[in-house]
Length: 330
Ligand code: UFG
Image 1 (cartoon, rainbow, N blue to C red):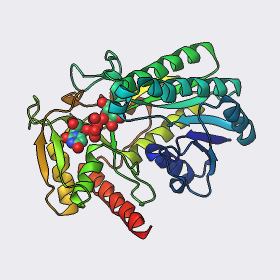
Image 2 (cartoon, rainbow, N blue to C red):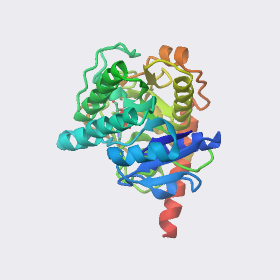
Image 3 (cartoon, helix red, strand yellow):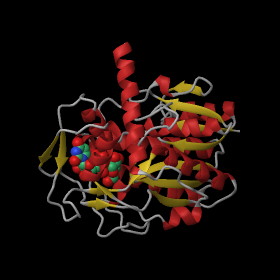
Image 4 (cartoon, helix red, strand yellow):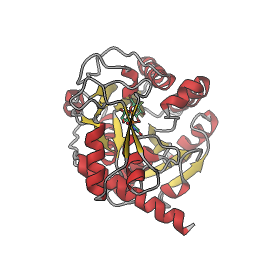
């Protein structure tokens, strides 16, 4: 019995691999290394470099490694890129997911965990957002994930196949043991950008919009520590293996922090002031996105251990320091 983790060399996938291996599971990572890193995969995991959408390859892996569950992280995640390259995003996210699901069903894999996103909601009408809110993505990225959710629902109705779709809110932070973190060179996410600015790798940090209808005028998000997110995946896996039915769950803590709160937390961790510039709003940013978390707590035996913005900021900063030391050593 082993778990296939697509995108296991990437940011969130690599934390899932660590969580699985920490509890003694056999893991097969399938990653094309387009944005992931070979070094992010522990040597004791089986790394296969290839496409998650390669049905034949996945079929072979299922047989060879006796895979009983798939956690599907592979995909493209940069929202603005999805606007300029929608078909690339529908290919990497939707078409690939379809092929992976087909291989899973053909190979008799009944348990499937899918990395979905809060982007399926678009601009929330109210917060916190429950899973039953209207789905109204405002980017091809969000649409590509929503379409996969629809395919999962239909496939689960037709086949001996159950899934958990986890709608991630703002994932941040790094493995507390320093084994992995957000390593994408082109990352645009606030906490990583703030950490890089604090370390002097960027001249300044833009605050995109200070005139939102929020407590301090900047956007509010529900930041979740990547290690807690991986733990939610383990619980989802156990539930599916135990025969649990298909379900869609928000993944967040149910509380929001503003851009200024985040900057303050990174400044505290770095013990330095960050050079910020108040910039115009970024296109497509909803003012506030906070997860409704009743369902996840009711459904999964999940007890987050890192619900602390200071800890999230400190771990992200520590990881950024680690990446710099690798750069300097190279
Ligand atoms: N922000 C800044 N300056 C920066 C970077 C970000 O002010 O340099 C602000 C953004 O405008 C936003 C907040 O910080 O208000 C968070 O932005 P991120 O880019 O970190 O994250 P997003 O909320 O835009 O995106 C996240 C996920 C996406 C997902 C989306 C769902 O990263 O994958 O939530 O809405 F699609």
